[in-house]
Length: 312
Ligand SMILES: Nc1ncnc2c1ncn2[C@@H]1O[C@H](COP(=O)(O)OP(=O)(O)OP(=O)(O)O)[C@@H](O)[C@H]1O
Ligand SMILES: [Mg+2]
Image (cartoon, rainbow, N blue to C red; front, side, top):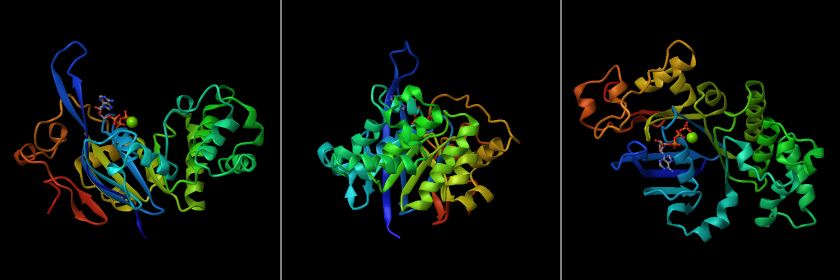
């Protein structure tokens, strides 16, 4: 199987004020030397607490935001070396779905036009064929044909998310990035939308990145799991390996918290550490070594971790 995505040493930092009134600025390494591959037809789940850099990574992968350093190879293209114009031509191959379908849909556009727009823009169907194509998309995402004339505010959250998914799928993308696509929905609706993602996976050769802070959802949908903490990958592997044999203390804590057997320890040290492992301030297994050097990701193809304490 070919590689759809190959990411190497990706970096993105932001300079922010320490507090709203301070002059002093600090550098937040939102994505810090992230490298990974995604094979065709596979789904990679990305987990991590709020602020771990999941959304920043998603934006950088699709070049919606320019990374500071590193490369993103998509199919046979080096996205990081491409101009905005060149990127525009291959955007139809890589689509993103955001958490809040309400803000990602144009409130003044009927659903028909919302889905027809990318189809026409990318020349996927002519004006004569577009109606049928939109109806095909409706069918794929389980929307009734009656919705064509509606506006986003006339629909429920779940229905709106179906529209957002339909709009993303309308161009038959090779890669779909879903950033917390069910977090804003009621629990009962979440299951329906997760099932829709499962259907899409099964019916097409699409490769997916599914971002969520909810481990139970990521576990359900992914082939591989990547755990992020403060911009860095701390553990990565097949779903089975990561969930049945979590190695990094942070992953273990997240899994315990998702099973309700452990309360998440709040991160009291607000600043990013200057050197060493980012998880050091919270880690129960920490040794002095951990504060001195950044642990590299090591292990096998199926399972890697960045932790001195759990490596052989
Ligand atoms: N445009 C920006 N300007 C300044 N700081 C930013 C910007 N975008 C993100 N950050 C910071 O980068 C870090 C990572 O943020 P990001 O939104 O990528 O995390 P996340 O894992 O998606 O979190 P969440 O689960 O809350 O969505 C955070 O500290 C955030 O405050
Ligand atoms: Mg986010």
